[in-house]
Figure 1 (cartoon, rainbow, N blue to C red):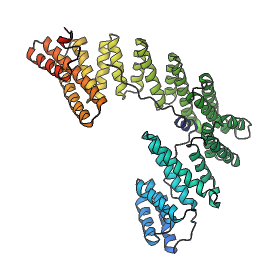
Figure 2: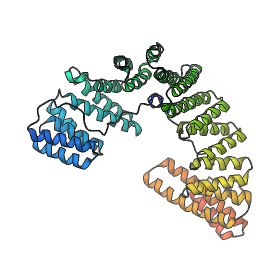
Figure 3: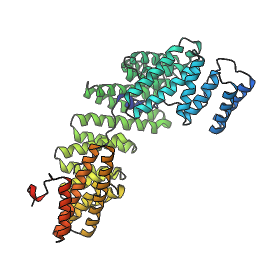
Figure 4: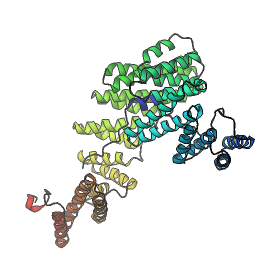
Length: 489
C-alpha cells in the first residue's frame, strides 16, 4: 500500500557537471579516424583503400567502409594504421569486441604509435562510461586506468602534442582519483592557448569541478578579456561546478545555493547577449534551478524545493531532474503526514507527466487516504491503463470499487481475479529466479488479492468461494492478520 518509490536522479559530481557545461559524456565519435599514418603504407593499393574507406565514412556508408578496410587488412595484415582504422570503424558501428581487439593489436604492432594509443584510449573511456551506466565501478575504473596507461606511454612522442590528444588526456585524468588538479592544469593551459575554442572552455569548466579549480577559472573569466557572452556562459558553469562540489561533499549548502542562483543569472545574461544560444542557456538555467531545489529538499524546506522544481520544469519540461525532485518532495510530505500537500504535489505531477504510472498510482493512494474516492478511482484507473499487468495497481483499483465506492462489483471481481493470476505468475518467476525480495513483494500482493476476493464472496453469500480463498491465503501465509484465527472478524 505504500507509494511507489521515485526514481531519484543521480547527484554525482560528473553527471551534474556535464549537464552544467553542456559537454557530452566521452563517446567515441563516429567520424572517420583523423590521424596521419605513422608508417608508410605497404603499397599504394593500401593507401587507396584507406582513403576510399574514409570517403565512404564521410558519406555514412558504413558497410562500404568496412568492406574497404577489411580489404586493406587482408593486403597489409601487420600494418598498425590499418588496424586502427578498421578497429575504430567497427567499434563505433556496434562491433565493439572485434574493434577493441584490432586496436589492441595495433598497439602491439607499434607500441609508440600515437594514433593507435589515442584511439584505443577513446574506446576504453567509452567502455568505462558503459560500465558506469551498469553500476560496475570496478570495471569502469579499470578501463580508465588502461586508457591512462596508453596515453602516458606515447605522450613523449611528437605526435602527442595535438590539442585533441591533450584534451583526451584531461578527460582521462579527471576520472582518476587524485589527478583532478593535474587535469585542471592541463585544461587551463589548453583554454589559454586558444581562448576562441569553445570546446576547450567547456573542458576547462568540467575539469574545474574535478580539480577544484573553479575559483581560478572564475578569476580568469572575470578579467573580461573574452567576448561578454562567453565570459557569462562559462563563468556560470564554474559557479555551478563549485556549487555542485559543495553540495556533493556536504560542505556548505547555503553557499552552494547562492552559487546556483548566481549561475542562473549569469547564464540568463549569456542567453540575452547571444540570442542564438538562448534555448541552450535556458536548459542550463533549468538544471541550475532544479539543483537548487535539491538543496532545499535536503534542508527540509519542502515548499521552496517544490516551487524550484516546478519552475525548473516550466523552463524545460524535459528536465527529468525537476520531475524527480517534485516526486521526492511529494513523497516526503506523505511521510510527514502532510497529506493535502502531498495530494496536490502528486496531482501536479500527473498533469506534468501523464505517462508516468507511478505518479497516478501514488495520487490514487493519497486520494484514498484523504477520502477523495472518486478521484482515487480515476487515478488508479489511469495507472492501470498505463501498466495493465501490474498486480498491485490492478488490485488497488478494484479495492476502491469494492470498499469505498461500493459499485460495479462484477468489475472489481474480474480485476481481483486478474491481480491474483498476475501475482501468482510473478511469484513463480521470482522463486524460479531465486529473487527473495521480489518473491516477498509478490506474495504480499497475492495475499491482498485473496483477502479482497474472500471478503467480496463472503458479502455476496458465496461461502464456498470465500472459504476457498481463505484457505488459499492460509496456505500462502498463515500469519496474515486478516485470517479469522489471527483475530480478524
